[in-house]
Length: 297
Ligand SMILES: Nc1ncnc2c1ncn2[C@@H]1O[C@H](COP(=O)(O)OP(=O)(O)OP(=O)(O)O)[C@@H](O)[C@H]1O
Ligand SMILES: [Mg+2]
Image (cartoon, rainbow, N blue to C red; front, side):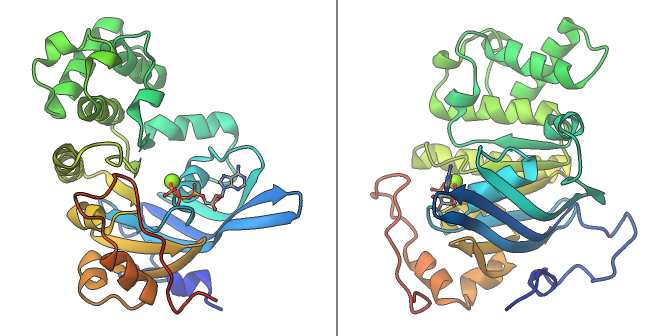
């Protein structure tokens, strides 16, 4: 059985201890389990990985492999009935021991999430500008509404929303799906997080818009130096943005390596099958064929 230490990616020395070479995120032995009538079910099993400062990690796997539970465990936002064990260190600070109030400060301030469906994260009753501004004010003391509005407009400009000074007063329903995702990313950006976790950020979008949002994420990562975790079932999507990839299946880490290596020289049968199953443009968006490999029992 592999230990968490052996699943850490190569670039990080095992004794890396100083602030400069310490990874931004260090996950060890992360297990997420649900208590069910028939006992505990582990949906993430002793996961271990490092995200270097400014790095971009792709987490790939078919539906149900534990990708979202991993990100929710990092954010301490697991659904009721789920519990996590193991270690999650952000820049040397252990997150698993923090109180809810401290964790609230980490969320938004240091780690921000972008979800698949921006409509469910945006409030239909407030303008997007108000929502970006108030999210910002909630995490920064002494900021006036006027200043926060300015920051909202700037953030919208940074995600290339045309005419941001006018669009800031529009409501979510006045934006297309791709534009709403830009609004969510603008909200994330205004917080200047150290780490952005994007869970299937492009799955609900059509292919052209997907490419634009991926370009935007890559640009943001380059310009801000924020670390990025991009979660998707689509290997083609991660290849655009991530430099390291981990492949998950049934809560296990199947394979990890550089994006280039995973693409050119996949080691696990499951990864090879995922590569073969990269959805074609004419596939239903969000669908992935069920995969059976020799690793199935
Ligand atoms: N409330 C729950 N109770 C029991 N099991 C759950 C619950 N929520 C999720 N699970 C299980 O946890 C496992 C991992 O789910 P997770 O949402 O992390 O998958 P995923 O990789 O994000 O899939 P997708 O690509 O569909 O988003 C799944 O097998 C799922 O059935
Ligand atoms: Mg998911």
